[in-house]
Length: 219
Image (tube, rainbow, N blue to C red):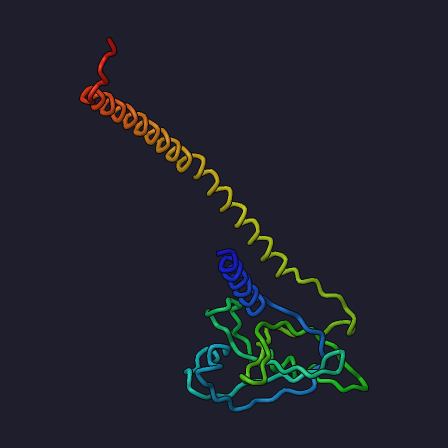
């Protein structure tokens, strides 16, 4: 049972980590190299990882997909999709994909004269499934070594910890006020039942002893 408990605990922990890692915003320091629009065909394996069509458009099996191509500070390439999230999940309420594409195109630079930008995004990049992280915002930064503090993630985890603490306090008070008195009354009733049973059983044994054949008295 110990191995089963640890397996379940690790699976729950992995699920929570994956959920937060996919949905919470992340920021990359990159250099935008180009922007493009491709025709994307969705499958049952990767459809879950794409947002809805732009606000006002009809969702189809395939549609145009905006991409932002970039290069990281270590030379590795990164590709971001640029889709509206609308009022669905995750709740970024992004409705300005066209504006973001124009902003990214205006920040295109070369290696000789780089313009470093911070791209805020969520999601994962996977070449096998053909999925990309979704860009939420782009802004120019001072350089490739700028320090970005994830205030949004800190605030979210802070509120989550406060909520967990309040729920724990509420459950603790509920246990003290309702569950523990109920268990105490149940223990008292059980002790009383045991005492009654012991008395009843003792009376039965005493009555049975009167019917037993007594040994003869010695003269």
